[in-house]
Length: 93
Image 1 (cartoon, rainbow, N blue to C red):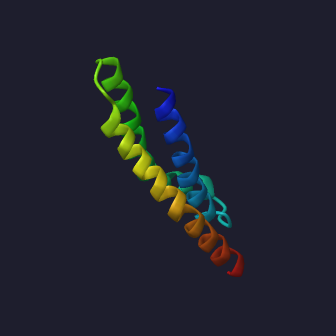
Image 2: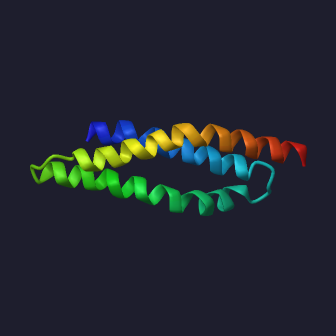
């Protein structure tokens, strides 16, 4: 359970930073940000809970943790670029 939390939490944080950067200058940005990031949160939550369920069943959660790790690697790679670009666009407008 700890490993899925250690992998899933930074992924969710990076996805949330992109959503916050997209809605930084809007009045109702919180609601719109939630609508942007919710579809991206769902796979992380599904694989995290699947890893816990598989572990509780006595099986190896390796495939679920690999999927979470791939999502984290993708988020670490793309989220700073997307966040920076979104902030640059919102500040120039």
